[in-house]
Length: 399
Ligand code: PMP
Ligand code: GLN
Image 1 (cartoon, rainbow, N blue to C red):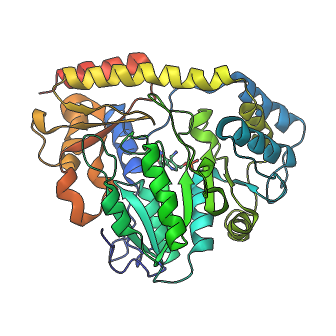
Image 2 (cartoon, helix red, strand yellow):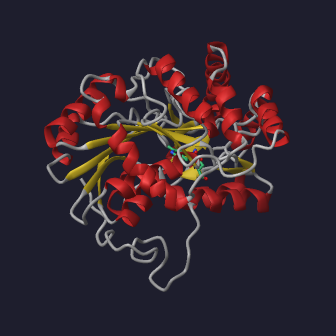
């Protein structure tokens, strides 16, 4: 368990998002993408696809713009979009939500997370439990919401949590348990027993579960357990999704949140002052996407599975040790066998040494835990196969 001290101060500086003298720090993704653009290196850092998503979805957006869907949509989202989200949750997760009261549209998963955390955190004594390493926005949003981050480590190479450590982290101070499954950055898909344990702990301590489902259709091995489908979970879970990864449209920033009406109402009250509304012509387009046949959804996982295998083989051939991911865009590799001592320094030298950009796992952990992840590096597989092959060859030739 780790706390970020002083994270309750509700300013960018106080929350640690700027340096003490007020200098803004970009996210690791922005920083590494700039490095890739400047050096011409292959960008396996930031997780965005280099190919477009389904033509029907893109065409529906063009059509909506032509049809004049260009002004403020309703705050909660266009009714047909909300209906499509509800149908999608019933189809894939077996859980039904009332489109009128239990679904909202958000500006990507990021706004869904921000609105939910800001709405549900009450006091500086509230704690949010997350698995570590964690997606960078979690720590930032918890800090901005004025709560304390409590982390439970996921350890190389399997990255499943120890249930005793999880039990110890959740207390009556826990307001939210924040899960991301499949998990960024580790690529883990959590065992059903882990998620059942999360639900039991949330019930015992009356905590809310927030699940970040952005990789819900990118399960590559085995099966994912949708948390809200577990007994006792639906009434205390807000599930947050994104069109970005599923429909290869990370720049559209369309997301959605589902959950019981009181929790969704709370998130909505915050959302209306963050963005008010969002993405009018993109909502009908994503509704088309959400209603695509099952073959589309299994197809994107099949494609990514091939890319993951190609990336993993390339990393192994280059001498790195690999933790095979069961889901998400990402593969974590240990760069110690190729001489890395510090992942951050290794990733900064990689464009020059190999013409490849990757992200250090140390960017996703609390300073106290940095040593445990010192030589681990995240590579993204969501790129064209020729690009992944080229990156593997470059890493193998690394001097
Ligand atoms: N959560 C996780 C785990 C992510 O990897 C990302 C990046 N797609 C997001 C949230 C943010 O999603 P969006 O771009 O839809 O805001
Ligand atoms: N989710 C993507 C990643 O983890 C990119 C997120 C971002 O740039 N903020 O790489």
